[in-house]
Image (cartoon, rainbow over all chains, first blue to last red; front, side):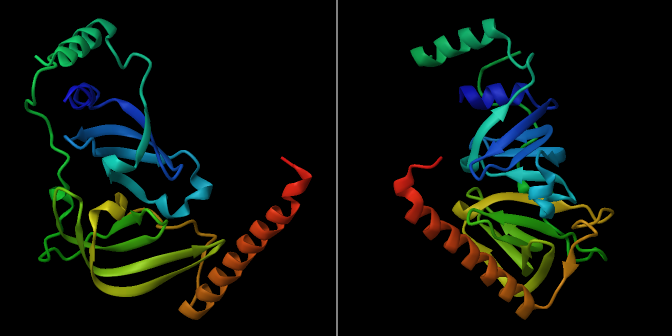
Length: 93
Length: 134
């Protein structure tokens, strides 16, 4: 559940999601669920000329299983809290 | 900031994308599949695997500057094949204005030509492999 909780903290921030098919989409993180499915708002595709069918897509749902990377804003993590949470998760408590 | 269990947050449910049929304007969705196909239709149902029911589905085939919508009908898509689901903004152009809508026969021909070209490229590369080019 750690990454789910982590992503929830990032709701409202701008992220870039790179998919396994190399499509990269930038948008405001709207929501995330337990499968790490992601909903983005105000999206734009990084390489628009290569994916013309995405032109009029402004909101989208991305299935968690097809995500390769999520690029976060540089201030997207509080290291102290993340360390603590990671240790707690590793201990299983 | 809490890292405990789930608390209140907007869920990633697709329920917002369900289209009530009493609306005059039906909202079309774009579904991109793992094999690169693009389906357009009205979302009628979904579940936790992202299995989808699409009504009035059609496949949008794009080859270069040509495109075509092939009508398919009522489709159930198995969730594992879904890459993404996008709302098509009715106020925006669905495709760049430079793109031309053509007939089904024409797009199939163009698709085949493109396929043959990539195949040829593949065999050429294989034959040249001994040259150790990169």
